[in-house]
Length: 409
Image (cartoon, rainbow, N blue to C red):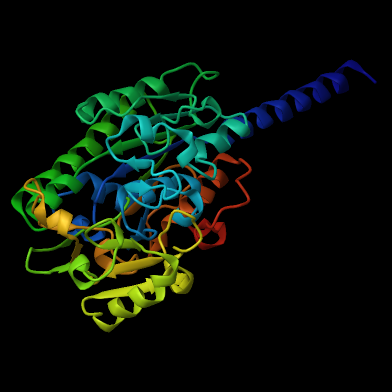
């Protein structure tokens, strides 16, 4: 073989190797999953979210994001990152009683929320770890478990008072890490506009201010991503855990008063209440509630319709009462507490009511551009992220990639 042919072959080999390097470089995807607590699907239509609207127009926008039941914060944040219904991942409410040990899991109890025994399934950062991908979490339900193998590569313990801008800056610092230390998956959580809507109602000035404020955080995030050259390199997924609906004190039902002739244990108030009673009294108590069924629905655990996906977990009590949207279930203990607060809005109701739906907006190299779709399901976000990162998902999930994959390029 003469020298000229050898040189040509060497050039061809170099070009092939260079092409492969470009392909593999392009294929290394990054995902930033951001949640705005309680951001109802139609808050985007108030004309006060220019930054979100810009991303919505440029990327993928779903009419709404359907949560899992119950439509509460902790259950749905963990559903988003596990692809499992609460009955399967174990976080069935913001407050969970283990009826066998009387231990309780609740928001604000740092010991409980960090105890890995409450969390079943596999969170997306665990899946990433298993597939050799680094991950990071700036506050997310389940990210601060006390078992190292169930933690992201990098994470912070939840600090409700940490300014939003500090959270954004933390994400930027992770993205500025060297390639071998940089997380390909990052989750970021903001607690508004949930708290303002709870306190003042969904149509209040305060809630609109909170909506506009979190939108401004999106603007800052995009600006800072642009500063470090990442605005078009990262797959940004913006979601919320649930929606919100207005309530008032006139629409309360005292379930304990209806069952005053029975010795029952009540767990939960508001949209959902679970009731425990001696086994031989379950049918009788159920029939009393059924006879008085008005502005709520009552089910025995084994007979609750399958669309709730709320029957398998052992911590679910034998009787489940679900209020109609806008109504609240209470017991005597709630009514007697001098500190009982008056909410103007709440969530936790049936997942298929539009008021309970959140948002889904996405933009990045993996997503289609200018694409609008109907309602997506939050259980499908986990397999979607796995697809983007080219990692093998947990096979025990309830999510289905086939329902959501069409929004990718």
